[in-house]
Image (cartoon, rainbow, N blue to C red; front, side, top):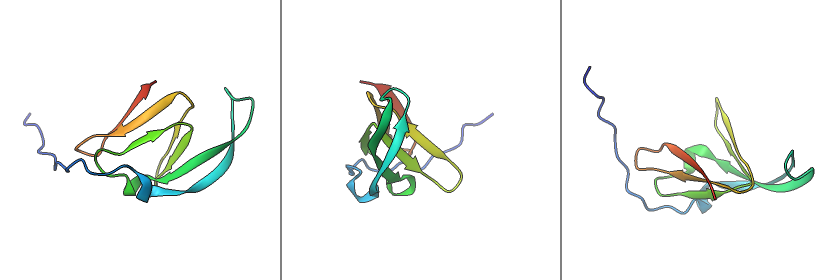
Length: 84
C-alpha cells in the first residue's frame, strides 16, 4: 500500500497564539483544583510546545496534558507527549 503524502509545515510557533485562557481543573495528581492553561488545538502550529498541566480543545476531542508532561507539535501537526 503506498504511503500517503502528508503536507509538512515549517516549525515557527511557540503556541502563545493558541492560548485561550486559564481554568481551574481538578487534577488527580494535584489533589486539588489547579490553574490550567487552555489551548485551541487548531491554532497550535508546527514547533509549538505546551507544558502541562494544560488542556488542548478541539471540535471532536480534548487532550489533557498532566503536570510533568510536555506536548510538542511536529511538522505534520501531530502531537507528541513526553514525560519531563
